[in-house]
Image 1: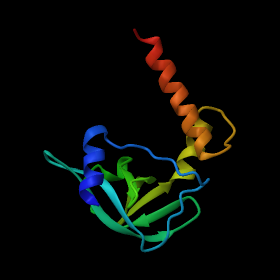
Image 2: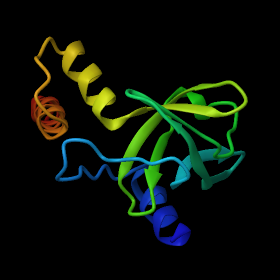
Image 3: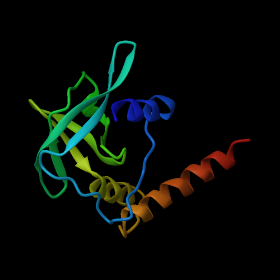
Length: 133
């Protein structure tokens, strides 16, 4: 599994897959991977979820000095399940729903769903791309 995930990440940083469900469900003890850069090596570091809360979860993936600055957390299926935001002996990550809510709030939109937030991000990216010849 790690080789497949590593190949996806090394080609395009991370491919964001959105589940059909409103919330990508994470469970304690679930295996996850965090993108980590150590020198010239870029890798997925395995770990497991330690604690799940409403907006965040803690996990024990290995970390470098920048992992807590937004590194993606993916599950075994390769779906984005969170984004690392802090380190205090373990990593804490925002879950996907919380990320989507923050994106919508930053754009002054009412949060509807993860899928709607991703669609809005795609629309913004397309508009920016189309505005530059």
